[in-house]
Length: 305
Image (tube, rainbow, N blue to C red):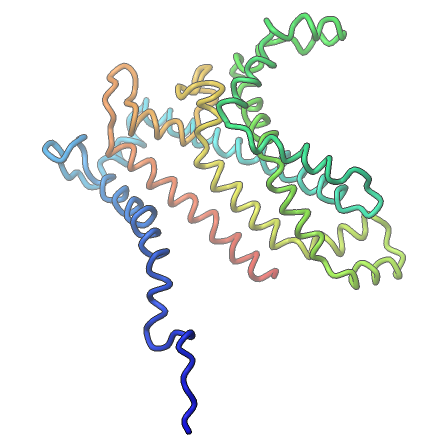
């Protein structure tokens, strides 16, 4: 007698049924908008009737017109600075907190995990508004003066030399819980045999972290670095919540995301008319930068893993 085939297991080309929903979602909401943005970067005009093909004219305008060039390179440099602040503060503190939270002698671990992660549940607009109040010298001046901290009474978000750093630190404070929890999960997945072997060899806490734990969580470090890089080059909401989309004061907090919004969606002041072609050109360059930045880290992470 012939055995009956298991009808539950798909065979032939039935696997496409399971892949199709995710594929359609990816094409409609990710691949098609990306390709359409590349197409729009080669045109000028804000609607189909007035749209005209100009090739790389938008890119030429972006890098040759004095005002456009100044605004773009300013936002480009600020975005890199924004990213480095997150790497140095958010991710380094995330590793430190993760090491502390995975310590076997740590008491109140659940409480501290909750405290670190709670800010990520706040809406960015709420976070921005609260920090604007906290950093406003009108509101906090008297309190700081009574605490003999008068040197901290200054318009941190109103000075071009400190505004971008403050906005970046606010973002770090809000999102630090995510890398911390990812590092905690990675450290807990390290085999106990490796840690016990290091203890037998007489390794101290620093040697254990530097030579055993850190090398084994490098793939997670690389993944978090990629996520930080992508998110920071698309950052918009934190600047909007604290300094509005004009990059105040004096464009010192202008990022690629806010520049794209002003040019391609809201329209540059004083004209107020969106330039979709120029906005698409900015988005295209951002995509290229992200691609060039992510691929080497992915290859290095895979090789290390």
